[in-house]
Length: 224
Ligand SMILES: Nc1ncnc2c1ncn2[C@@H]1O[C@H](COP(=O)(O)OP(=O)(O)OP(=O)(O)O)[C@@H](O)[C@H]1O
Ligand SMILES: [Mg+2]
Image 1 (cartoon, rainbow, N blue to C red):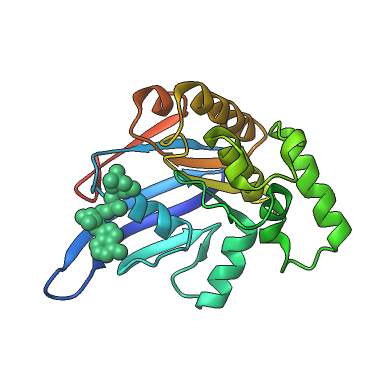
Image 2: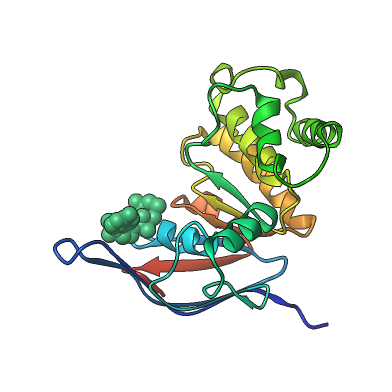
């Protein structure tokens, strides 16, 4: 059986900034990710891990090089088309959770689905199901600041899953959590991978990295 590449990066370079403060964050990255992969990205601070993940997630664009996402060249499409793909095919989880403080847990999870054309009842039903899956059924009407870090990260995971993405990108998802909460998050992440989601996760913790199926090490903007 042929396994399809989800992501194919070739010669990806990322330059930042003005002439005065020019930095090259990525120096020609080649990376292929297949459907069902679970990759941990490790490397020193400033080596380009987040830059790489942001380019993969269409939150940022490469200065040069090619990026095929599901065999489509996403460097050649406009920002609206990128946003459309990002919203439907990619789920993000960040170190600092990035939840909206003013609205409750349920509304945070529903948020990415508001512009997808599903009806309100359906959206609410799906969000509640996801919150049950991540063990937060007793907390759906609380505000994020009434939850622990581990619980907030579980809300962020439910939100990332709302539009049924095939790809999950996580930038240090356990970075702000104690060991026990970090392990709970990893249990959920591994479960998602078992259910077929492709996962790319940045971490600087060895114990976390070794739970992935593949390791990609980045140093000075290059894959080692
Ligand atoms: N918006 C930006 N403008 C200018 N330079 C940037 C920007 N974002 C990142 N950089 C630079 O690009 C390089 C790579 O940064 P990046 O955030 O990708 O590193 P990282 O591997 O994620 O580090 P950490 O482990 O600390 O999160 C660094 O030298 C950083 O200073
Ligand atoms: Mg980073």
